[in-house]
Length: 324
Ligand SMILES: NC(=O)c1ccc[n+]([C@@H]2O[C@H](COP(=O)([O-])OP(=O)(O)OC[C@H]3O[C@@H](n4cnc5c(N)ncnc54)[C@H](OP(=O)(O)O)[C@@H]3O)[C@@H](O)[C@H]2O)c1
View 1 (tube, rainbow, N blue to C red):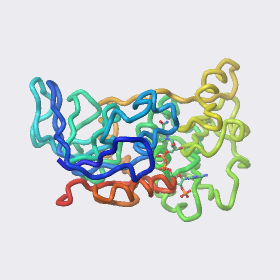
View 2: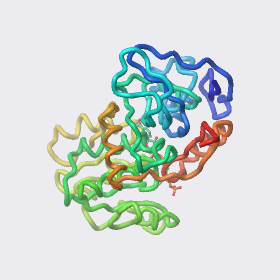
View 3: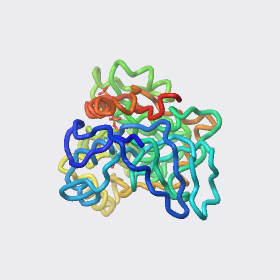
């Protein structure tokens, strides 16, 4: 089968298209013919081997995994012995962040892994980018136990995580202020934000309002800078390690003092329940992933280069099967 492979850490150019064996399908696993995948920030981090800490999971010197790609949407091509929840021909989607392998024509995944059948009202292109950024957003929002009526500020409402966070927060009934640049104010308002701060015109950390939660979805701020925006007992969430990788440490220390605190869930929950959650949300129309650029699998190096600019709007999708 055709796959985007690499054998060392490095820039986008370490990735090339090659013919490789189809993945083995063990008992209780399904083989998925991938129609659409994505290139996301997690793929970029693991491909580059940065931050260095990822190498403790992915191989210290060389990557253990040679085909990246976590998100996928496609069709079940075969089921192994013991599979009861999926049948050949089922349209499925999900993310395989423990094993990767979605930048290929086929991937294998345990039937109880993070996948689900696709909602009838979405396309492969919409289903594929619906889980990676959004599961980080959901993990953080769940950790903070955000309730209806709470005021939440999302810094970076246009990223994969931020654009999902705005929609998830609105579905919970939160009052959302989102921060983005001038060009994307209308897009973010369209996601449901009650108020949008244009970061080109205003420094959001000087905002007069206070919030129950500040969610930095692009890792461009810090607890220190955002503290004054928080109500007493307010929570600072970040999807990024933060300056000097302090966020996980602050998440351990700040709750001890009983005031404003940092939350940083490690590792985020990634299971079938999460994929079903997004299936339900897409089915009801409460969530629709934002799609920016589209590439073919043989253009994946270009896709990586674009994602690494840090300026994609929502998600970048890769068509693996050009016929779809
Ligand atoms: N915890 C984890 O394991 C994990 C996993 C994935 C990602 N992350 C981190 O989470 C963050 C977000 O990930 P993502 O996938 O959502 O990123 P992304 O989609 O690449 O985010 C890009 C978006 O962020 C916006 N942006 C950049 N700087 C901004 C700023 N100063 N203010 C407001 N918006 C800004 C960009 O808009 P403009 O073009 O207008 O600047 C662009 O739309 C990254 O820091 C990433 O490293 C963490």
